[in-house]
Length: 550
Ligand code: ADP
Image 1 (tube, rainbow, N blue to C red):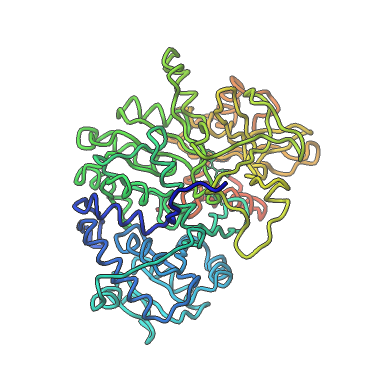
Image 2 (image 1 turned 180 degrees about the horizontal axis):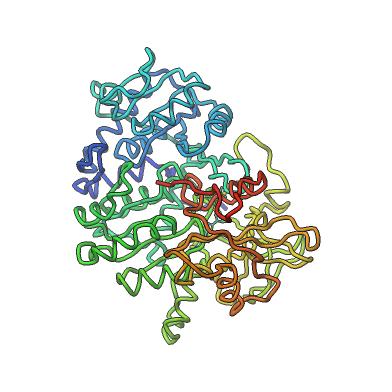
């Protein structure tokens, strides 16, 4: 018997409506390219979203069209987050840090005809423009006419200004696609994930759980994670549904401490690289940023030393999350249990450095091969598999394959993990990054996070390089906090030997000025491997691994 409840569709438009009707006076703050802060409230956002939807319809779109954005974290991008799905088309945020070749591949696969482009990315866009012809280009912040202003291009404010402030969206099927995001390509080519209204709505409810992001009406929330990366971890939707204020840093990551001071940010979210970068300034200006009480961290393992610094030096709670673009993206989040209160501080830190427990709605299991389900004993290592209403069931434009999905419909995450008896997962490594030496596995993540606790190590990565005798051997690549005069290989091997068996210790450490990062701030192991393979090391042990990330 079917139950007798209303079946109102769960849509993104409802999140905006709730924010406007209940929290219409709350603000969105954005740093403009000129460094000034732009502010307006959710009521104004709503009107502009409607104008943008009307303007987009006037371009002659069809249901299901994929509309690209090449935009930083701004109020205009937030408007696009709602206006595009409201027209029954699909928002496709492009990762501006991907190479022109990858972008070309993605844009062609997605079939983007319309693109919104932020002037701050004019240079990157020029490379793409050489390869792809868009039917409509709408330019944001293009005051200097930096972008090659082709006949077909329009200026964003002019595009929306004459439009009606009302737009009636009528999405009856919550399973319609609302956005398309590609994975960041850390361990291979980016893959497309097509989100539905329903998945994104349910993900928003789940992350607003008090033990997940736990955002409230009194919060001021700053997603430092780019809006092109897995829908900024769903934070804009979560913040607006809870009535929090939103703070968007534009392309001015160097100003985030000022922004926290000026807007009173209480919760911020970003990858560990970003937090590592800003920590010294945050400590220096500790008094000014005392509104900030919580950071949400994920995308890569959060080193225990960094959690300690945030907690001890700044009194900021660290919430460590694990997820994937494929999971909208949140899968697990680490908050200690009541039973952990009795533990020592160091023991609690060890727990916080784990990736945590599944958020409500997410199911996890650990598999060894196709049939063997492993126990939750904190020791057995297997592939983490997941299922939830906000997990991908097939990649965009491809049939599901056994490489990515099991026969009984679980997503194979490609991550190796343990799960303990309390349901906390610990990511051991990506299957593609695990180092196989003499038939044994070495966890690059475990070595990297332990190296980060050494006072001289500022950043680290461990990769497997081919070895005739052992198959693979680990190579350490480190950025040092201070100049080192001793034999760094000897020092770090000695340090690691406190914790790991001898065969785990990298035979050599290479010192570099900076590690290359992907567009979302993760260490780019593929690039390091390519550089090593093409023998770009020079003879003095330094190499050309340096790169910048902003
Ligand atoms: P990509 O796989 O291209 O990096 P994603 O950004 O979707 O694209 O990354 C998801 C992957 O990032 C996960 O499968 C996992 O390997 C890694 N990851 C995410 N969060 C964490 C975390 N807290 N600790 C360790 N690894 C993480």
